[in-house]
Length: 483
Length: 81
Image (tube, rainbow over all chains, first blue to last red):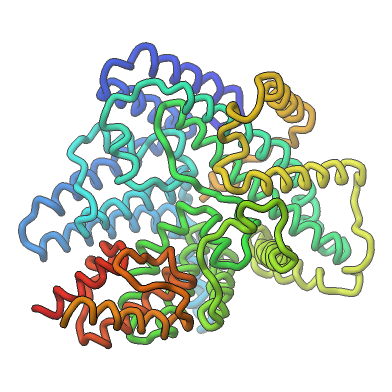
């Protein structure tokens, strides 16, 4: 059930109605209903993995309690390790088994071995990378005594399986989520309407911006050896807006849907293309993953390597981003993608810059020339790097990139339907302008009713709905569902 | 060692690591107030603090730090033990 489908719309209306009209009496009833709805949602996608989700919930729930209730430090550590092995084991088996197996076979064959690679038929459970990371963070936080373990199996199950974020995040933290479902939620009209507006914006970005850019990106990436350099460069830009629109659109819908149930999820994107360096970019792109990696990988690693000073920082940041890349999938192209970002951090370590998370040109209408150059440079770097993310293999990525840097980079791009391409580009420009103007907000419609009259607001809503109906691109599955 | 002395030394470490002194060192100062004090340089600062006072931090202790005041408090505690 993807968010922009009729199935989901019907599901959402039913869940919403029962939540606020039938199960509204106590927090317990509300949570029972959310858990039931979430399990239904997951089972609808693929009922075979419900068992895995339930086992993960139970095992982590009991491990959390065990870690806290055990007196001896050595036993606490044992339970922690059990949790780490269990969760990483799930990921390792379902997501990475064939990758390691194939890499091992190739390695043996390098030394004149004669092994044959016959992959196991393993289906990737939806959302496994997301809920497993939540569980790892939870177990570690309990061990570090940063949070009390949950002793409410119902609440804990809702935390893990809550349907708005189950398939592709945000990767929520227990300390932010659990307190919100402890008490009975009462209907907050302001929050709910804000959620609806955020959903509308997310749908527009996903269906109009992302899906249309996807058509051109797909065409250029599949025929990359046939087109000229300027087309290839344009292809990377289309892809950047495809993936950003896809995942930020998804996140806006997820966060908006959650607001309908009175629950706030964390911000996942903060206009990342308006960044002046790589560090700034990753503080605004897929924030729930990056902050997870910073807290649970980079900080402990750089702490243990602190004697090495800058070299220690360098090793940790490269390792952290290798893992960010690998998290996306079992493929060398993702590992290389992460590795490149690790390398991009090196200049930041050696040439002091202001690394404060910043809203570019805060409070002003236009950025300075220096900021424009930095943002465009960063955007091009991100776009070129995303070739490794998008290409079918690491060889294709190198082939694609070498195709860009040829003399015909300065020729006119080749397109099948030029008129439509120009319309899409106009949408992208409009999108960038809207994002720029509202870059200090969580989404463009924040505080919308205090600023604009009812007629203007509804005119805008209807225009967006109309644009979605007229210009919605060919249906594309959400990219992050595969991770 | 007096807390005022600790805070003074911290100020010097900050300006050495960050290569500027565009901040006013006091207990309420936190990383977000200081240019360049981010998650990367934080570890360099911590290493220098350990060296200067000849102490060892635990990661758990660092996670709880809020501002210069709590860092001073922690260093003070470590020096007494």
